[in-house]
Amino acid sequence: MERVMVVPLKKARRGSSRRFAPKALVYLRSFVGRHMKAGEAGGSVVIGHNLNQIIWERGITNPPRKVEVKAFKNPEGKVLVELASVKAEEWELFKNRGKPLKETKSGKADKDKKVEKTEKPVTEEKKESETKKKSARKSVAEKKAKSDKSAKKTTAKAKPAKKKE
Image (cartoon, rainbow, N blue to C red; front, side):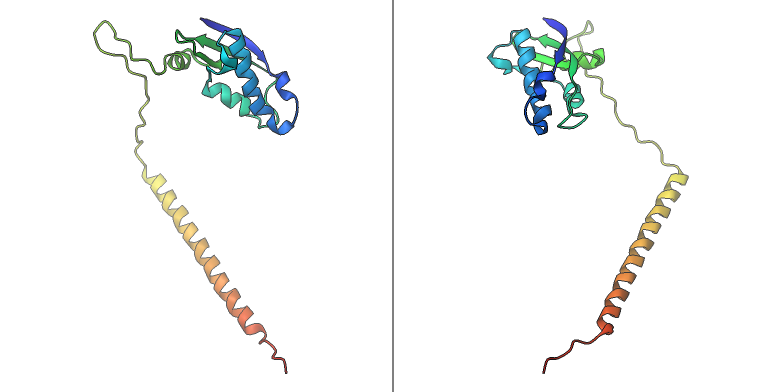
């Protein structure tokens, strides 16, 4: 069973302002659990990464007033909730997490689309700029060290301590 719904988070703004975002997550779980008939007061509701980011985006004291979400109840009774505006590919990956890969007509299992990071060739200009930055950092560190040493010498020569008689 899959639904798109708007969850009003206004009720999460009761009490201390330092707890609004955590309360919004608790209220979101209970609201979705109640409407999707998950049972146990939202104990079997899983909140997606994008939805969590949207709630925490503006800090602990200022979560959004309402959020549009997609909810999916799998056959085991667990409810998966994600932001409604999430891409279809991400939604399918989130829904099917933890399940074995489906086999295609060719008999091979589908693999999750992972973008491999390919190292870009570093040009000589970048190498030169990196070496200039490193040398600039070293010269700044050397100047600080020299100024620290000279400051220590001048304070030591300034006045000898008076002896009490």
